[in-house]
Length: 336
Length: 258
Image (cartoon, rainbow over all chains, first blue to last red; front, side):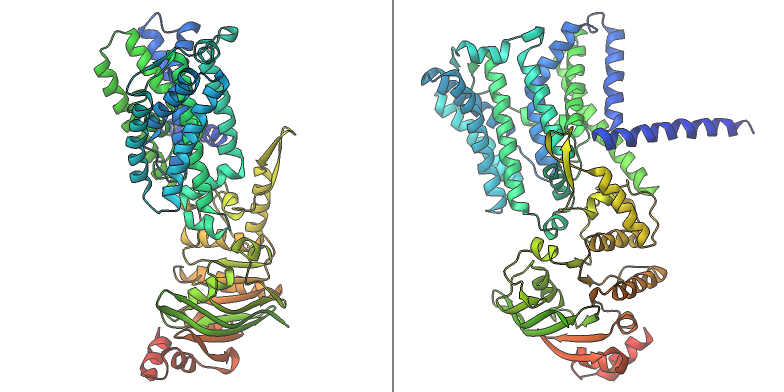
């Protein structure tokens, strides 16, 4: 008898949660769990550290997340289409070096430096896409090869040295603060909004998810899957180029070793944000929240003066936990 | 009047000749059963009709016009729909996304941004189509992978019917279904016929084929060998045409029993 009201309240609470969940999924393509985790994490951190809850600290977190965030957006596009891009970090490093080479060594105007980053990244992505779609080499192998190729090329171009001394306009893109907000944060937000719109609301985005879900279904619908994949890899490379530009501008140098292992962090952010590693599901807002979860975790542990070794462990644990929760939910959904 | 006409269709993959000159004619509102043993070329033939494969030789016309050079998307726009045996559904996407895949209606977001998929219209039309089929789905906003086999079949059929097809090709639509669901699929084929839509039914379940078709075409080793009026034929005759006369009594007895 006493158990009955409890059950009723439970279901209503559960029902409310379910409807909120599906609403956020439908409107924003965002899994609510990740947002809850992020907010929970922020509450815990602000209880533990008096320095956490401040505007400047939040801007710090966003600034630290900007580069990884852009890379994670790239990872989301490719992974949700059932592909994989392991070359993100290397392409980012290559792009920064090309940009710095164009702007410093050649001495071209700053605009060409930006263009150099984006073109270098897109080209590397195009080569990835071309090899995956036309030559039929598995994405894992192609992008693993590109990981080495792009890194090596970055070292060749820069002769293994860091290229210092960017023009002030480029530095502004990394260090400027219009209205007190760091430029990389602004660029991340704009990029995220545009790409979220593309992935969640356009035909292009729908085909991306559907290809990751069932390539044949898309092909029989008369859509050119190979061309779509080629565009996705090129886009991924271009975004890696943007990340390379942000990083270069922030440290005021083209560093050929920039972005080593960043691809793994980017993929982690995408997966924590709800992207299905095997394709078919993913959203940019989710990915940004995934990146922020990692950023907050890192920032909080820093403020608490926890050794950085433990931070790596924490992020690894969060990744596994996120996928576990996701799988658990999905299995339960499938049963209902 | 002939809707679709295939003349002397040939197709080979490398050294393997699959189709050696197939002739087939479908009139409007006609239900044709396409039967044949495994490897007879049924699926290849259907894919040359939908445009997934290009025929090496021969001619395909729809309403008298050649469609040989058109890609799958254009042939679909002309009214040729195919429901694949594996249904070709994107299982993590919802009902409307699957029904409208490749043909999403778009509008402008806030009146400016182009190319926003009009999800509300999609959902509304998807629900209408599901209702029209008299089917019940738990919710059209759920991923189709969470539905039963029959419900997924319903989504696949709804997708084929949403864009007013003239010809629907069904590849083994009843193979994986429960008995009650088989009946509703057969009923659906009859109502398509009543609406003047032609159907090509590929099936190994000869009882279903005999029950619902007007004509049965037997494909054997890449040639349409036999053309039978369903009303005037028997299971034995169909089976003998499929296996080519040998051991037919035994095979027919087995099919009848099954």
